[in-house]
Length: 225
Image (cartoon, rainbow, N blue to C red; front, top):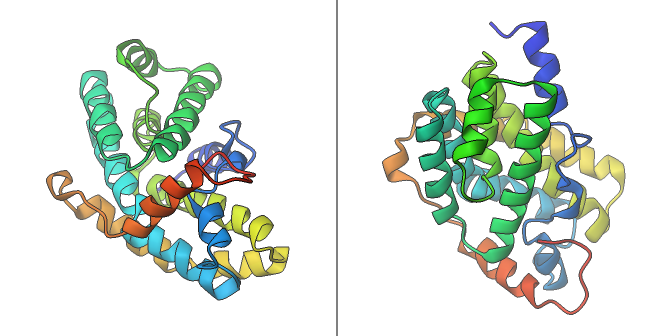
């Protein structure tokens, strides 16, 4: 059972208002919009669902679940952070995940302190991926994997939807329609991520990497990724 306390923490941690700077990233969407691949509500909805099922949502979800299982072992958490870094396809995706992960860990450790978080921070040699610190933090605070992973994937999708609303552009209502359409996609992706062995991690979203690399040299940019 997920307690009221757990729900409040998940709502805080994976809210757009949580100070990790998620508003600054589009996960390559900005380049996809410039190329005309994403141009309306349906194409944005398809793009986000595809990323959740087959792109970073799949890989990050698997590492989130693995970190949740590993906690409170900070040594194993550090090893997972290193491995998750290796699965980051582009420099901008690494920036996106690492910057948010660093801010997430610092904020959680300050507002919801735990010795295992302190130990993880001591062992890390680089900025930790958001997926790993998110799963690790949820576990050490006693929050079940399933609701935590669903909230994490929802936050990932919401970040891209929010960017799309500004880039396409779309109205806020269209953005909420897309979010509503993800109500079956996100839980299904969470189940797959939790059950799939980490040894078989992989993606089927090469276009996302291509557009991310194009974004690095895009002439006019709003977002950092």
